[in-house]
Image (cartoon, rainbow, N blue to C red):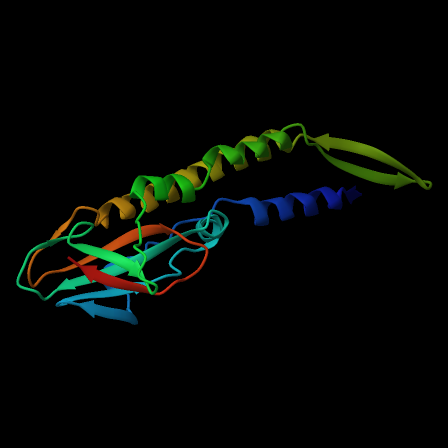
Length: 205
């Protein structure tokens, strides 16, 4: 008796390389920030390289960098992020943070892409035996009827769940238009259009 092993190998490769990935929460409040600078009593700390797996690949492909930031307002005034507090690059040009909804739309996993697993639906697993030197098919099991819809549904659910966590964290740490009171520290996540990990500086008006 001989099972069609190349088919099993192909299915294993597809499963290992094309599955939906989970989302590991970033938790900006718990990050150990290293990069820091200050302007007029306001301190910025930030960290790149936050995402993993498919989200990190999307980040690289779309030339978007997700950055965790920590802003401490030690001045005597309440300040608004985006109006009174801005970010710049080393050369002085202003950093324009993306809308968090745009960050999500660009970096989320495409749940619909896992529908390609339905192409496995017609697949059969054949069992053969050799009699007097002649190979004969003894049975055909329609494994695709289970594998195709099962893998498609499972990956779509996993991608949807991961995307939900990603979106919720982006909303929770959205600093655009946020008032940072005197003596207060705020944490956030911002997306910027960039293909490199440029140093960031804080600017207060």
